[in-house]
Length: 62
Image 1 (cartoon, one colour):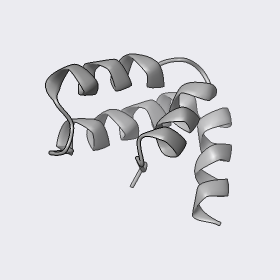
Image 2: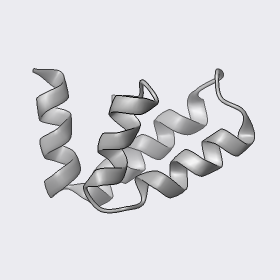
Image 3: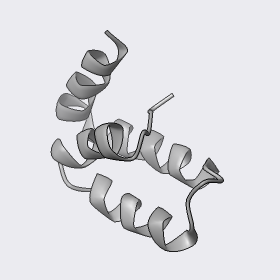
Image 4: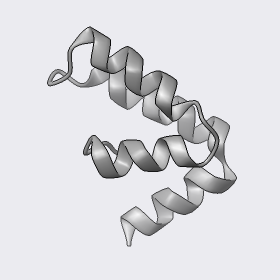
């Protein structure tokens, strides 16, 4: 259920979700600096970027 809510947020409230993703990415210790920058750039793309972060990088918004 949480995943569905996060996907809907990613589609409709992208600016808010992007900020939440960036906060989560910066706080992760399991990623290198290059990976963090790459995921921040990927999540910038409207709708699909945050969804890819959720599904492929085991990320979350909160």
